[in-house]
Length: 220
Figure (cartoon, rainbow, N blue to C red):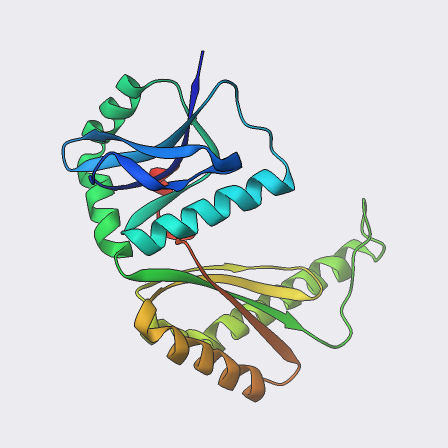
């Protein structure tokens, strides 16, 4: 029995696409109404390895350059076309609205690390007394919140954001920002300004990526 590997949800186009998926497999549409799922067909469930993941990512990026899409995370497997069509009809409004939010935008990731001495708990039980360990964790949380406030200026350059505060000794914050393509240079320039202005903090901005963090409805 064949399996359908989902790459993205998008607006209905012309059926067969001039693009290849993993291992050169042709991509095609399964459509219902104005929406279509972009899939490739396989005899068995694809293997999860580095080469396949890179093939998949390149295919999604090619699709993103062709049309607005909601990228699916690998591997989202669909059993048959009838089930795909049912899902497209059932979630039409949700996916239509998500496509509107993502249209013309990409995802940029920002990670913040802090320097200086930090209490680092080992694997298993903490090495310091319980009260001191808890105090250290609270201090890391406080610093992460302060850092998030310092990065609030990025919000004006993004349509949406998803920020996680972390309590690791070095990595304090991981953020995803939905940014219009035309504003990407302004956003990265602002990250560079903040990186230079914040003491003992290093900011890393990567992307642009397909907007995985903002289209959870396309994940099956």
